[in-house]
Image (cartoon, rainbow, N blue to C red):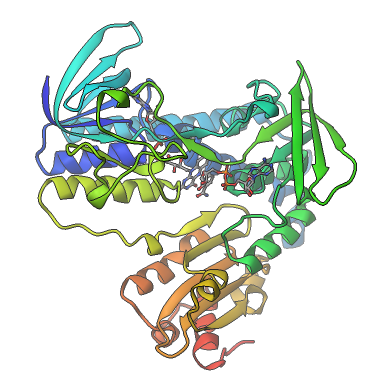
Length: 467
Ligand code: FAD
Ligand code: NAI
């Protein structure tokens, strides 16, 4: 079969690229080695983790905050198999949606492992071993990433697990150790802590969420401690050993001192993800990898092989679904002769704990390192009527603006519904608005979004109204 475009990998990078290619009239094929479309994000990432975050938050609220609202319930119980079943249904509905979108956009789907025979020929080996060879004008590699699992951590998919297996635990563990206080560790740690598991997090660095706003990370850590999570910061894991029903985690403080052993039901390894290019046949092409195994791309996300592009987790940059999507669209529009643009500084990041952390643009730490002069406005959520009404008083919004021009350089928040609120910061920064512009926009009352207006007022002239 001959195609204008062949895409390897059907995650948010690959499938969105396929839709855009279909819209632009390209004869397109997408190859996926699993038998469902959607990649990490839909099958074992964003969607299932958010389904469990929502379910566990309902359970936690019913047990801990509903009484304050005058609502009581007797015999509250947890049905983990049902919670997981609901999560599976959400996943399968979402994946089926992608299948429908491929059909709608006339994209041919090949289920099987894709590998390069040369730069313009890709072989697909299906589960039943049948082989198909596709001839491609252009190829996009969108093969994503896999969890990092060092040999010393004894990953066994049974008691020493990654996020993939964690999303399918159907019997509530009494105890869980999580290695890594990054996004996965804190999101899945929240799920289990809310359900009643004793969660302990081991982190190599002296803080959680490296790279994110320091104040937000500190407040989140305080909040998670209240939820019952224990943190071992600045600790190094020496070994993890799993048995049939338990795991043993050995660690030691980085500052020196005796080794500590934690006996646990499950150990979740959440120390980052690595690009996935295994068995892709890159050696048959001119595509090159960097020292971290990421595919090297240059201008327009083109690899060293002129007709091959790469997008998403398999290349440099944040490993985020919406980053992969933007890159998919960018490459397809570039191939079609258009002039698309991505501003990587304006790709927002969200941590779906409760409250949530959301962030766009530069942090104070980065601006200091870059020698940029800036001013900061901050507003606490507890000063908002809306927060008091709902009982979500934790957190703050921070707006950072250039000292002289007042241009917004960053917005960071730890707040209820921050994941959705951050879009105001993204949109205004896209249009290079000032903090004063943000402050002068009418925000509906009473909403959480008023905290953004107030933080912007604080940044502009230190004149927040309600604090
Ligand atoms: P992937 O989604 O990894 O898709 C790659 C696809 O390629 C896979 O389906 C794979 O099977 C296929 N493939 C690989 N090699 C081959 C081959 N040789 N032949 C055929 N097919 C192949 N990001 C967010 O933005 N928000 C979130 O809330 C969020 N939550 C997450 C929660 C968890 C638990 C995890 C693990 C990740 C989360 N992420 C989140 C990250 C997000 O899932 C990734 O950034 C995103 O999926 C990357 O998209 P991609 O298209 O580059 O690759
Ligand atoms: P991460 O990079 O977010 O965090 C890894 C953490 O582990 C860091 O704090 C790091 O210092 C620590 N660490 C590394 N090695 C360690 C060791 N040996 N011992 C102890 N700690 C160690 O990686 P994570 O959480 O695995 O997530 C992977 C990717 O998935 C992230 O890049 C993230 O962007 C994406 N993701 C995004 C989500 C979102 O957008 N809400 C949700 C979940 C994942």
